[in-house]
Image (tube, rainbow, N blue to C red; front, side, top):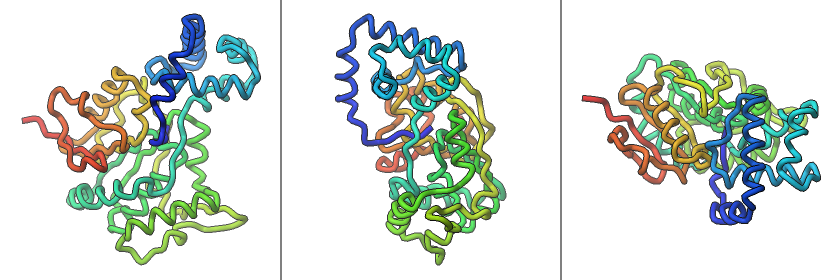
Length: 294
């Protein structure tokens, strides 16, 4: 799952504060019903974000109370799946925050070149734009053939879209702008990474062949193997502190002893690194390296 980094958290918090105790109880019961029926636990997500998305659902479904969504979850065919999709976050684009990808080139790629084979985990991959962006960048540096990229999200509908690798003209135009900002040392123009037909573009097979898309829920699932690089960008801003700590511990367990972790621009490990496990390599890009245990 992938989150936007332009959220007005003050506005969302004020919206939450207007709820009555009865409304907050309704939200708690609804989340419990979702968990018991689907296995997805949203109780540790930032409450302001959930309330905003639930209110959007209420508006679309023309209901007056949070509790009115409960019978729809229980008895209306397909509604639970629809609500789960609404509660997950899927905002992304190709080469989003180009400076982050420049930082990968500077700090991470020289180390990846020392491995004959390496693994990357992109947690919360959303519809796949940033996964394919990473594949393009690795290919430009001659690193793609020895990579295996695991792209995960808990939203199956979004994962299915990512697997198709088909994108709109608007998405391609924005991606090309970001790509050109990078000034990648490659002779391959952005559009040549796609085959275009009927006003949409499909990622070329040579960029998709080393990517494995899989369902993984950061809230409850476990270690995803030993990785040299983990990307989880603009996802944890939607988690409360206890869930953030769980996820960081999961990444610690899943990384090579001196692996790299890339977060979103509004995320950091300032309050989550009590054991001094992480070295900040680039503050602007929020790029960390795991410090080996002595």
